[in-house]
Image (cartoon, rainbow, N blue to C red; front, top):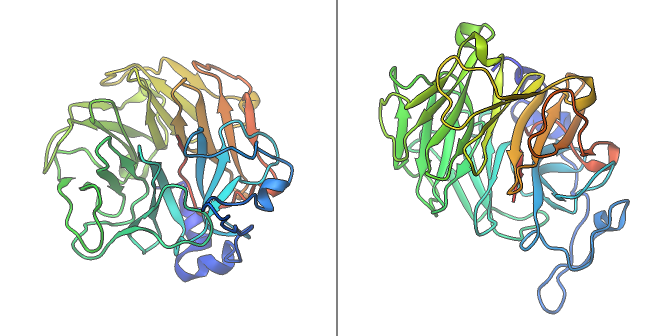
Length: 351
């Protein structure tokens, strides 16, 4: 993918720890007698949730990041705004994470990039420098530069592999050098450097594909639940009317609307959109505070969360009202030196 090249170039391989910050976590936690974690120094800075706040019972934003505070996943309450530190940090990641997903049990899945080719899973409530509870990695997995990850209601994980233009699916609880239970790959699939992935309520699989033959363009391809092998998509969004330039992250809301983070805009398509169709909404313009949006997530009330990077490696999260359209201001923005947002990660999840 063209626009991700500057991150890979700056943070490739082992150099990530020095180029993107491999220091200690922002803060540590101490268990109380009943096993719950005490308030941390991060929580005592400019954003202070209620002491009873927990991502196991309240909605949170999960953002992979590489910064001076370490490599891992930053976690913020969904209501966070301004120059605020994360409420929690998972810093056990051994490589810069790409995409992120959270399952129904609040386990956190990250895709490991830049030659590591792994999916790591952290347990519900994980915090600090903790080991993953599962790691999918090895020659049998079919992983090749996995940019994203999605999880279905049964806990199966879905991964777009940019390196070999495939989608691989792993059974719930998969661990080690395991073979996928499904692989979508081949000339009929329409996959080309896939990066973003999302599932709808029927477990149909939505994938973004970047930059046909290295030029501007791209597509969204959709596969039936359970698709396996060299199968054709059931729907494809592509063509000059779509507004797609360099599609990255993708999300699907409860009614099937499709949201794509695309270079300088967020484009939204109707449920079951197919062919050379125009978006039903486009969020773009100076008021939006979008800075090369990389990834997108939607919550249960259809508010839209966007992870932005720009070429100076400034990172922010912008949040938009449900059905936002045009050159609109975000309703919230997480941005600034206290946020611990940094280059290296490109996914966002809300749960």
